[in-house]
Image (cartoon, rainbow, N blue to C red; front, top):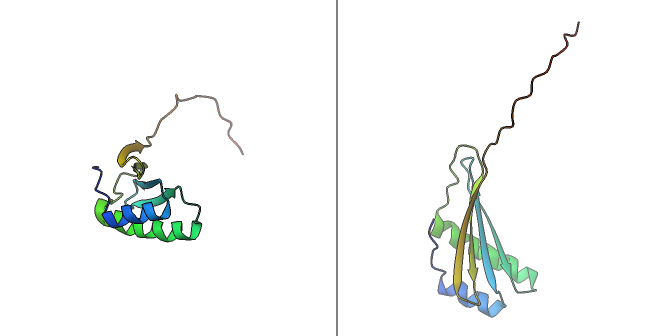
Length: 110
C-alpha cells in the first residue's frame, strides 16, 4: 500500500478546523474492507464527525481497499500529520498460533 496524496481541499479544511492529524485505519481479511477515520486537535466533535465522513469518502476512492483475504485479520494504518506535513504508514496482521498438543485419558459416559 502506498501513501496517497492528501487533497488540498481536505488539507485546507483540516487547518481551518484546527485538526493536527488525520488517521485512516483500514482492516480486512474476510473479503470485506473496513475503514475508521479519526482526526485529532479540534474540540468541535460535530464538525469533526462531518469532516471524518468527508475524509472517508475520499479515502475509499483513493485507496480502493478490498479487504480480501483468507479469514485472518490484517490492516494498514495511515497517519497524516497536518502540522509537519508528513505521512506514515504501518501494516499489521493476525496469524493463527497453535499451542503444543496436550494428551490425557478420557472417560466414557454411559
